[in-house]
Amino acid sequence: MLFLDAAFRFAGVTILLLVAVIVLRDARHLLQGRLAGTMCIGLAGMLISTMPSWYDAPFAVYAIAWILHIPNIILLWLFALSLYQDEFEMRRIHWLALAATTVFVIGIQSSVYLNYQPTTLFFIAANRLLGFSVLAHLLWTAWQGRSDDLIEARRRSRLWFIFGLGITALIIMSGEALHYGLTFDNDDPDWFTTARTIVAFPMIIIGALWFLKLLPETLLFERTAPQPIAQAKVHPKDQATHARLVELIENDKLYREHGLGIGDLATKLGVPEHQLRALINKGLGYRNFAAFLNQYRLSEAKSALSDPEQARTPILTIAMDVGYASLATFNRAFKSEEGTTPSQFRTDALTKAAQV
Image (cartoon, rainbow, N blue to C red; front, side):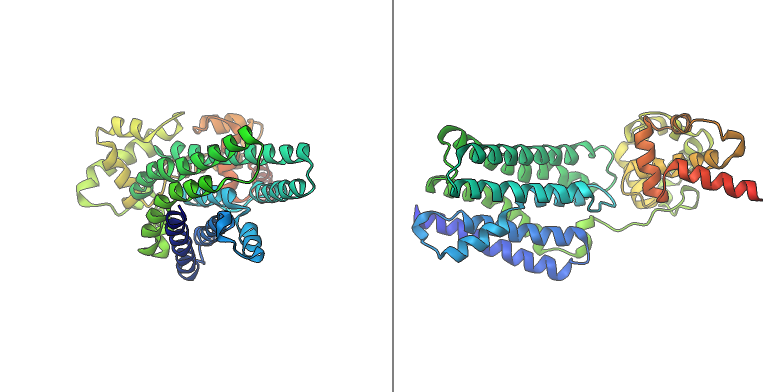
């Protein structure tokens, strides 16, 4: 058992630290790179801090590794969000999640040291609830955006991310929760730590193979710059499709249709969905279908908000008229694009119009 554990554990630690060095060296200018490197260091810390007792490592090694492993599940969550949400940035909720898991893990160790079981149970339950919540959100995020994703490499990666990294984390976390639920012992048995290392090892290898052939732009899956549809430079074989797309979007204003999906648009154009995905992504430079629609929806919305004759038209009405299903979705898209709320934009625009 010692040989089996050492083979997987120390190989895993070595690979993770090597990947962390490479990613932080070559992709530290990207948020995805910084999160990936930090996550690899944390996972290496987890493998070291959970070493079975027979290794008899110095306390300082366990202590440092234990500190490094604290934010693992949150870092995994943030890394996934940075990959699959365009223009992702760290927000207050993300920092709160990091702070919460730190408090919970430190609370667990402190209450175990003080031998106060009710507090231990509370902190373990809170940490497990947080972990399962962010893991569920991670899997949902990877799956939910698949139909809207125009970048084929990223779209394909969502499946292996869900069924690989996500399921591996779910198995490990479920095993830890089940062990504690049956034994009320926060210290995992040696066989369990070995099993956890073996379960995690395939994903460590897959991740390493991906990162070791990494260009920094791989974390973005590609770099493209959105272009106005009418000025797009598309492949000659897609010119006819492009012309029909212009007709439907700009003249017929199909973007106003609620719940319009890329499959629906492909059907209306009479072309295969993969061909339309390639046209909008490669030819027009959009990373996801929502961004493509937002260009037209927000343009019309801004015109309406700036129009003195529509000054009393509710913002919700304008949002619904241009194709948004809810005011919250419209507000998020508008603020992301303009850096201000629709109401503030309207106030500023109407004030300028009145001064002319």
